[in-house]
Amino acid sequence: MMAASDHRRLAAIAMLIGVIALAGCAASPDGEREGGSGEGPSGELTIFAAASLSGAFDELATQFEAEHPDVDVLPISYDGSSVLATQLIEGASADVFASADERNMTEVVDAGLTSGAEPFATNTMQIAVAPGNPERIDGLTSLAQDDLLVVMCAPEVPCGGAAQALLDAAGAEVTPASEEQNVTAVLAKVKSGEADAGLVYRTDIAAAGDAVAAVDIAGAGRATNVYPLSALTDAVNPAAAEAFVAFVLSDAGQAVLHDFGFGAP
Image (cartoon, rainbow, N blue to C red; front, side, top):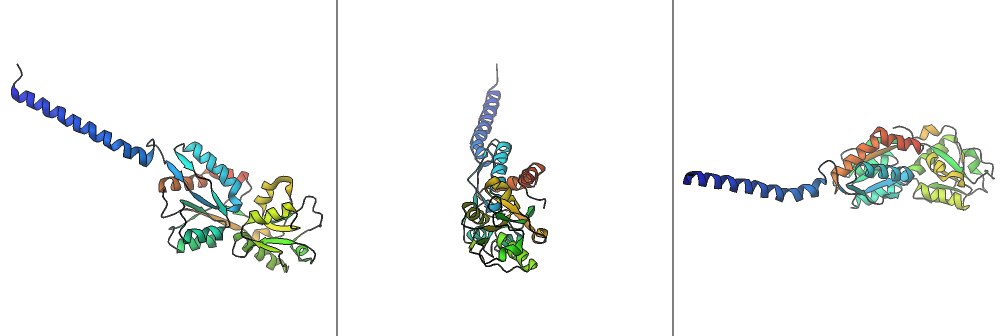
């Protein structure tokens, strides 16, 4: 027959096991909320990216979600880098910022919104013209003709800064018919016939297919834009932000960017 002390010992052991089991059950919901399956990031991811990255980043987001099924990349906010930087500095919430130049990223760094950024791609300029190049534009000096309607990005936008640097180097004085806040708007005016020519990135012309034709710019490499990328300090989802940055910098991410015409950083 079991002694009373043995009964008490078994009861204490059973109680201890029960407490451990309850603690495990209580902890699991928190674990699920923070890490999903526990094998990677989860939750929603908010990205701000330069307009010229739209095609490439849509594809990167698709592949990233395939690798991280617990992450939902929200529709990416595309615009001029200066516009996005201003929005972030004024309080807009995002997890990741991808700029088309280092200057606008520096403003975000100086505002204390990130501790640093990684270069992940490069891009150069071309002249977008109507299919068949009816105005026979053959370079930057051609754009100085008074009867041509030329559109560019605004000077504070990366594509505008690069375009002006190339015009200055070529000694071409061009008064644009309009200055747009992102490269997508410049290309749209050429596509629609509202402009005879637009200074845009070569990746934008490649993505436009037969809608426009490209005219090379001599010495375009002198105004190469370096694209930096950063997870933001106040990211709502820092784990997913860091994972996305790592993916863009990975061989798989760089292959996507190469396919869209971007150069290596």
